[in-house]
Length: 184
Image 1 (cartoon, rainbow, N blue to C red):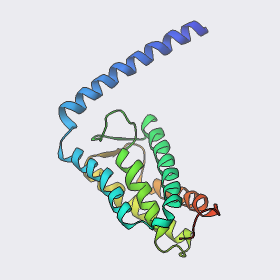
Image 2 (cartoon, one colour):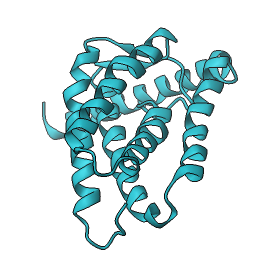
Image 3 (cartoon, rainbow, N blue to C red):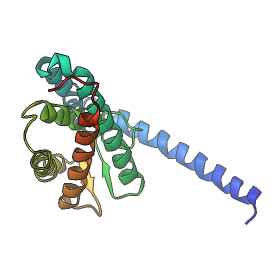
Image 4 (cartoon, rainbow, N blue to C red):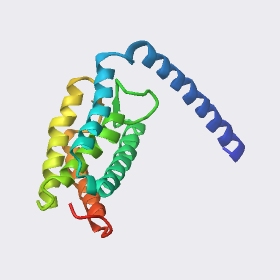
């Protein structure tokens, strides 16, 4: 196969994906939007941020948002990779074309990390990372599975545990190594 054939094949695949995305959007509009699962996703996206706005330590907002944005970026990236590689998928989504689970990646996860960083700031970060990861892996993930929103294909809940520990510790390190922030 030469370069021009490769480009033609690429264009064919791109058009096929576009057609599939149109079908996904049609399915989403017909069967998913405004269902109770969709409304649950709306709540799971908005409520954590409302809670965070109320509970956050105002003078630490910059540091916490820095940590939250980093967490959302990592979660969104890894979640998107998992979906694209067919390791897991989401059946009822807030928006049909974002590959990952928007409520978790950009709301539940970063807000939970920010609140856990804010509260008990002197607690050993490894203990917090393990507790956070255990809760996320063994309670939160099975909850979404039970609602038929999250569908894992070749992924097990216990695979998430060490990944989330590492992500939490990276976020902790980045949030606390910057000296320009006010102490929590």
